[in-house]
Image (cartoon, rainbow, N blue to C red; front, top):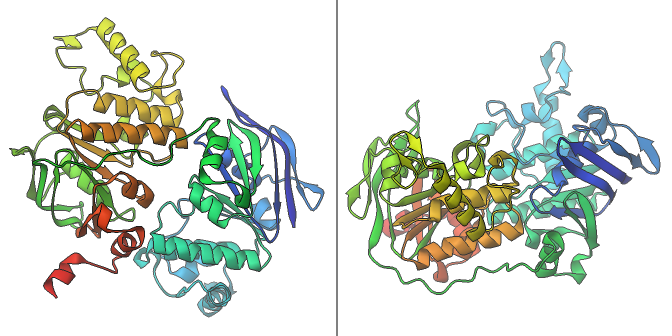
Amino acid sequence: MELELRGITKRFPGVVANDNVNLTIRSGEVLALVGENGAGKSTLMNILYGLYHADEGDIYIDGTPVKFETSGDAIAAGIGMVHQHFMLVPVFTVAENVVLGIEPTRGLSLDRAKAAAEVERISDEYSLGLEPDALIENLPVGIQQRVEISKVLLRDAEIVVFDEPTAVLTPQEIDDFFRIVEALKASGRGIVFITHKLTEALRVADRISVLRRGQTVGEADPSEIDEVGLAELMVGRPVQLVVDKSPAEPGASTLQVNDLHVVDASGRTLVDHTTFDVRAGEIVGIAGVQGNGQTELVEAITGLREILSGTVSVDGIDLTDASPRDVHLAAVAHVPEDRQRSGLVSEFSVAENLVLTRYHSDEFSSGVTMNWSRVRENARELVEQYDVRTPSIDTSAGTLSGGNQQKVIVARELSRDLRLVIASQPTRGVDVGSIEYIHAQVVAARDEGAAVMVVSTELDEVMALADRVIVLYRGRVVADLDRDATNHNEVGLYMAGALDQNEQASA
């Protein structure tokens, strides 16, 4: 099959998401689609999958024009999509999820034996290692992704689109995923691999297509371009990909977390008697597959979640039951993992968002009266200092690109004297150029003497920034490692639960 998108244009209010884009996808090859956040990658693939309709342009299959009114039309034409956030029913089995919507029946009931047989057939053919009767909620993320892949294969997809497929996988699971991609390619299927990880695009692709600001700006042969050249093509300028930092000079312990235990409303353990510290002048990276207690750990430390037992202190000051404001007043900065839900008020201006945590201070208010001239002066200073690309300080923060929204948060949180910085997923959904800038600010905070804790599901980011690496698995600290004495593979084994320093110490 040869699938062509010709002259695809898609407009939303105030923005052209795709501007006359041309793309060709062929059976038996892997096409990597890369670009900055907001470059139009997902919009283009949603048009291909029938979720959006193009304002201009056409889709052709083997030279014949086709129209996809719905995703069902795209599936019927042989196109499948594995979304970044899986579309699985946790309480269903693997087989029940795979056949959902096209269930084989025996009378009025699901033919479970036939469903299981279909899963086993696909699993054996592509070495997916699936057990038809396993419950989804009991499976690791990497296996859940294979269930999504088997759903696509059962529907006879000839072109398979993967949207950021490695975002939540361990290094070992990523290796397994790429083996599956090679098997799909060998079977004659065409693969579209949407990613912001340049090393992976270079590793797996036969061709790389680059989008910038909704337009196709180039196509690259992985054998003729490197990571630096690809980043420059994406961003339109040279990009520093390696984090530039000197060796750490750790001082006294600043953050002390002791026997911390956090549960959810049903009593299920989220953080399991966790103990660690972060010292002044060092960056501690918290590594782990998403869903292993990182979010709840950060919320507990920053006063956003109730602590069942254990203690949290900063410079010896007990913050175990402190409110978020009290934590902030203790010279703690918090860059939250979800900038839109927890980091910004989208409807507020850039200037207002830059004082969200300090509007009540004497610097910006007198009683109930805001000092708006000082608020605006502060905004102008920070927008310049942190290179926030905004039409105006009065622009609503929600209209900025993801990278610039993140810069607003980083500017607000880091623009004061700090003892502790907690940065959770600091570059999630952020383009290469903004990643470079945010990493530099995190390192600068360390060099100015703050203790820094970076939480990221991107192992490359943890390994690039951290002076020490702590691995969480099912809410427990299973490793505390010197960054210079470990590697991606070892950390990945701890992330997957295959290694545990606690067990090694007791052996």
